[in-house]
Amino acid sequence: MRLPNLIQFFGFMSLNTQVCFAENKTNESVCICGKMEFDIPTIETPFWSRFDYFKAESFIQSKFPASLAEKGQDYSDDYSDDYTENSDGDLRLVGGKKERPRPWLAFITKRLSEGEIHKSANCGGTLINHWYVITASHCVCPTDYIQRVQQSVCNEGKERIQITDNYPVQFDVCLAISNEKECLMEIQNDMSYKATEIVVRKERLKKNNLKTFDIALIKLDRKVRFNSDVSPVCLPGAIKFKKTIHKSAFASGFGITHFSLKDKKAECSTDMFLPRPYHTCSSSCQLSDPPADPLEESVCNWLIYNYFDKIQKLRLDIIRITIPAMNKAVICYPNINQYGWCHINTTISHVDFKEMPDWGLCDQHCQVGLDKNGQFFFESETGTAYWARQTLLTYKECFDFLKGMSGAEDARLLDNFDPAFELCAGSIHEPRLQDFQLENLTITKENIQGVATTVGVPSLSLPDFLGGTDTCQGDSGGPLWRWQVTDSITPEERVVQIGIIARGDKCARVNRPGIYTKISSFRDWIKKNTRDGGCDKFE
Image 1 (cartoon, rainbow, N blue to C red):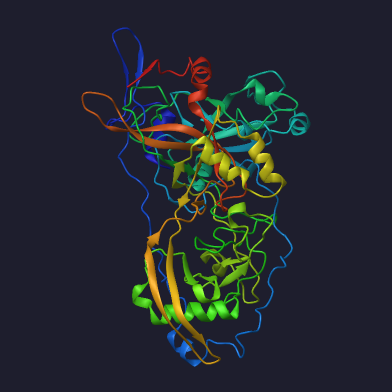
Image 2 (cartoon, one colour):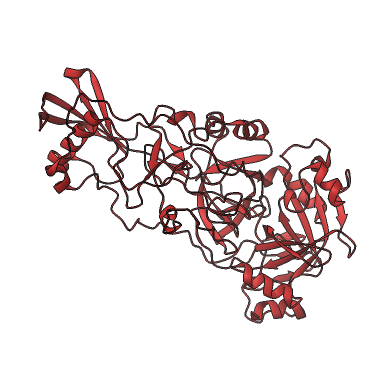
């Protein structure tokens, strides 16, 4: 068992402490919040070469069909959708980096009164003072009214609920850990914190409640002693900060690392590159050449082979070759990977990709999860703390992404988004386009001849898209936070929690932003319900 938790259990203060609790002359309890060593997630470079459109030797042998006039195979039919329905709550980080222990990060697990631990009901949370952890409402009270009645929990109209020994569900809370195993060990040794009360918004307890107001407070069974390992996060307005204009924020959580199917197997999806980034696969991954019109494939291969030194190699998504003599443009997708391609589920897509081919490049986890028969078996990692950078979206940006989503579940996510009480964030990608113009084109069965010239410079004229990094099952209740600089004589970086992980559509899929409870909208409610939290003032 880690020493800091033994110290907390027996109620002693750490002797070597940077984060302290103090009493001033007016007996006002002063707490230091959000203090820790500054860091941000690193961005790893893929270990395979993305720009590897074709092998030169295969091009020389034969890259042209027997007849360039023949049509390519029709791949317009979509495969059946065998995947799980929309994940509504209990979300987790996909595409993040492993976390180190954060002094304010909480792991919350739910168990029946008889003692059985429900691993599927794990959530995140954040320590905000000596006695309270903040989390999502759906982590402690079922969103569905019928479930609340069946489980006899969260009675309608009662915001503050006592968690007695007779209450049907018990909650264990572990602080400043980096994985679920540490928490389970604390629970087994009766060293975890227990919930004695939960506080939820009355709007969440109505029979026909909305998905907004997804915020809750958990009062712990004993006072948390602050030290260098355990201390509270700053909430908006807790102390004075300099104004910030940056849009970066970070999400931390303990949930799964890939979206799971109903049988708990991870869902195979495409990677970050066009034509269909971050889409759900509806077929197995194929190692053959992706579907393409024979003429367009030949023109693309010819240009890349003969004008390779003219092509922008760094993060290029599309090459567009204009052929004036044919009054058409050929679109090339110059990225491949070692994991092959798959057909995508077009019913779970976005309007921005409506005219794109219905295939994408398989992500790495698809190949890792294939058995010898080609069946997908990879299970999502869970229980380890991860964090990931997100970009805060304006209300207009968020609505534009939400409006373009397809499917009934997507429409429900759009209808329920309330910018007055919620934030929207995602991982933004800026695809690059390079233009060529092909003149004096001559095509035979054996060869292509012509002169290609670059047009302008590689541009960001394609629409931005979201995906790749997001919260997923098990992350709910965890923090969306950022570094802010204190407005003080000696400015320093502090951690400020601005949101609570609430909900989304699947995990890290294309143009599906994550929805977070906006903490600043609930400042008065939090203050009112945590007056006994032991921190009258923060600094």
